[in-house]
Length: 354
Image (cartoon, rainbow, N blue to C red; front, side, top):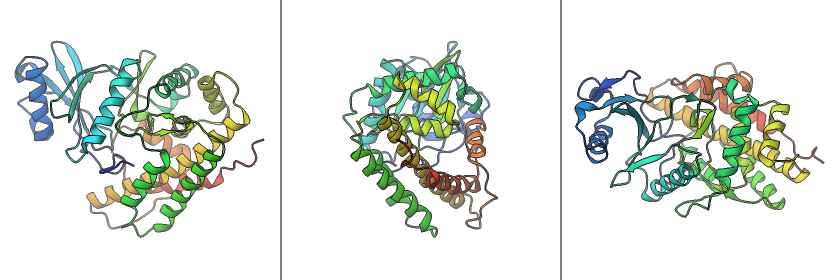
């Protein structure tokens, strides 16, 4: 999904969760590269030494960045370290998006960026990532919709703002070629291309989007909500963010209608209903690509025997497992998710909206 290495398929290490003082077990758990940035930020920002800092590696992601929690003088922060394989353009794009979002209160406040542009220190948000149960609460849905409005009002990212379609095509080109199951990739990218043409015909507007509002990228604290991980932003129809969030929250038709009206401030027009349905279909197809890509990468990393599918479940199973289980998921989970997402995309019809 990115130019160069792609977050959705380049897997980061899943770190341990125990808090350890720097200089003891933490150095065995955290990579030497991340530790070098811990030492740099400790010296440059805190003007302190390592003996006063505690570190907690943060788990649960499938991106190319590593996140660690630092605690010093009774205050907690998160240090995000971008992969050394990431391009300067993409690093600048992510940091720009984070800074703009923090300025309007949709992302944690930023305290420090490393001189080389690979690491960023931000406030730690005491809370948890969004669960399906919390995401279905009207007050949380309203807050997420409000934050989306603020994100979509931000200026276009000057460093990198690809369209949804071009980002998906980049992912497809990079990760589909060595997969024996070509049919699933072809079906998904065809749905995405067709949807892009439909949106163009409907004169869909384009805005700055977050691009990956899955529940693991949304923090909830004392009824406050924050978006994190800003590396997949696009310049596209705002309904792409809404549709993806709705899918990942497993919203039913009533919950979805409430969420859309919270965002729009009015009942959707026929044009808006069609655009949302098209975007939803495209985002199910997007989950086909990411599920197949992550499954293949996990299988390769774990040296599995090959492509083996577990019995398929309803979409709600995959949504709930991803949102509520903050552990590492299997290749079989993501392959199953991809198959069910494709069935869901094909089942959506726009022609019945009038």
